[in-house]
Image (cartoon, rainbow, N blue to C red):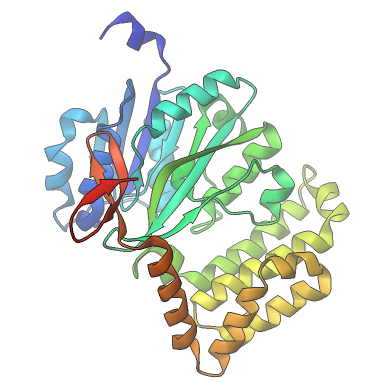
Length: 340
């Protein structure tokens, strides 16, 4: 390894995994083909029995460390990886997600240019189980109040300075689902965070993904999060001064998750509670109230059909593939395929 590589910060990336053999190889490849070195890659497997270990062994020469043993879930696995990691910059990517080509290089450049920043995040892409583009998620630079108002990031777009993570603490065992959002809030209360308008990661949504399979449970965790931060000396004054906005945002977040869970009448109730608290928050998500009401009267398939039609028009045949330096968004036609 030459002196130039030694002078660059080590980036530690952790993948927690359990029985995700169908997607795992794509995740691994999107990490190990990044055009940046040095990367310390760690996989913490929960004792998979579906062929995942054969995939891990195929790439183990590109890894610093991996283990397969029963654990207590995702928080336990990621924290285990954090404790093993030695890099100046840390991140984790779940075993069904992907890094875009050039992402890690851009992360390092951004943190080197902004030494006061404790966490950076890019934009993200949402795809289905087959890698077909569903949505692009673009952000702005948020502050801690924005995060308390449930401005939610696609988790794999986030990278953290080690020194900041050590200060605020690892993932909390209080949460199984919004574990990442709780951490972002603690980091933003400690140091500035920064958005970079570049697509860094792909998050995959499918029936077994937690965002779909446990949609209603997100609501309970979000409510517990707000109760805990409201009681904290760090956040108490901020919540008090912005209570109507924070709780209106909590209700719209809950409504969006409840729609995913099929609890449409409760979603409508939450949306109108948001309207009573802070109309501007309601107006940001007014279409979710329409979706919930349409679904209540048995026309959910009509709404979903319209959404799928819009996606088809907007995204054509766009999909994700893992190229030589990470994931790439491509578009297919009858004659050709090209990168965009």
